[in-house]
Length: 297
Image 1 (tube, one colour):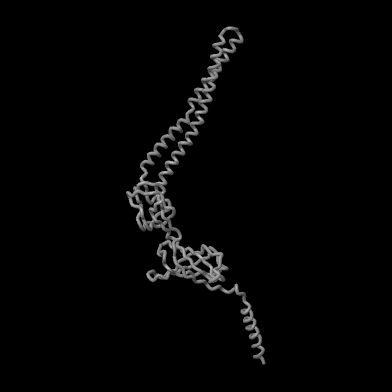
Image 2 (image 1 turned 90 degrees about the horizontal axis):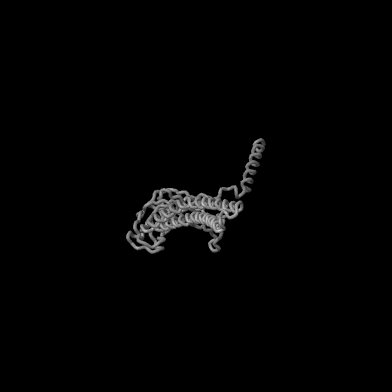
């Protein structure tokens, strides 16, 4: 009898435990990771073109060389443009010095002051003592004062024009610098030189591709996952990438989802996802196949 009393509470406890497990929320269970097969592709690539026509005077890189954003990859002959820049800079200096001096304006201002004083003295003399100076002399003094006033206005105008001339010459300097920059092939991002199509001494037309540049520190992997699993995914979700290439040592590479398509393929009921895989040591290469493991939150 005592054994049955001890066993009954135990059975009740086990029954409640099993019942609670049967009613456990599906969201509380750990979601199975999604494994996606994918092909590694380049994130960024560009064929750096020539912006101007001319002779290719220098190629500063070789295939396989790492370059930084802003590096000069190649240069067209720019000797004539450099001379244009030198001339523009000299003319800018002349315009600046001309605008900085106000000698002409100060001379005109002083001349006007003297002319007005002489005219005032003449007018005072005529008013005080009749016939001291003739009307002709008085007219001459008035004309001198008017000429001095106009000369001062002219000097003021010329000084304002000189200031505008500085802006004009500065624009010519900027244009010459811009023309020099357009004769240089500049790396738009940090990467690796994959191909060189321009040769030194060759005549280049605008738009001709000179150097192909690729980014390898990050690679792109694209795949398709079930629509049900995609519901909980968003950009920024961590992923792991396992390479299938037998020539490489087994290793996991880390990455992150950058795109989860808002569309579902009606035939396969799958969603396209894109991840960027870190490749700082550049062990991975575009074209390798592998598997992405995405842990669904």
